[in-house]
Image (cartoon, rainbow, N blue to C red; front, side, top):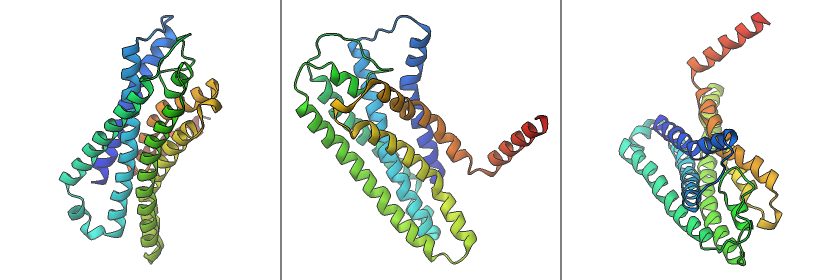
Length: 255
């Protein structure tokens, strides 16, 4: 089950980065940087849906690790394939349901004046800056949607890791504790990178956003993070680590 969730996260990351990367590369080599309103809505909807889906998927992965470490003998029984598929499908269903609400909330605003977005793609902060309406209601709804999702999934992750830490402390052998820790280390890094960048982006009010900071942070969680995740999980594999070691030794030998 654990590898099924890792594979699902990898698929989601590939899909997530493909929403942005082709368009960013196209804009870099082409002078035609125009995007239609429908294209902007579609890009925003899929990016929001996949971001919310990753929140839920990371939470379910934390629960999966809790079951694996706290009940190792009953792990495959407690996490059958059917349940794993249902959890992944539920992540996408909940993620895109929230994306509908988030997309509808921002595109109900009236936009006027200059329609140039100082950003790599259609993201919430630069879009809101083009709005003619009062954005207080928008911010309240946005904070409610993001807050409920982030707090809910964070609660699942934190409670799961409290149980995991309690279980690791009870393990007598140092080798067993080390193995249990490494089982969770990759997931913890992914959670920290993903939630950290999202909170930095959306925890501030719209008046506090600056274009350069938003672009740098957005590039991290839309392109860099999905590319780093597979590497983080691959480093737990002995064959991958052996391959990296050989490459490093050859590099030192040539140097």
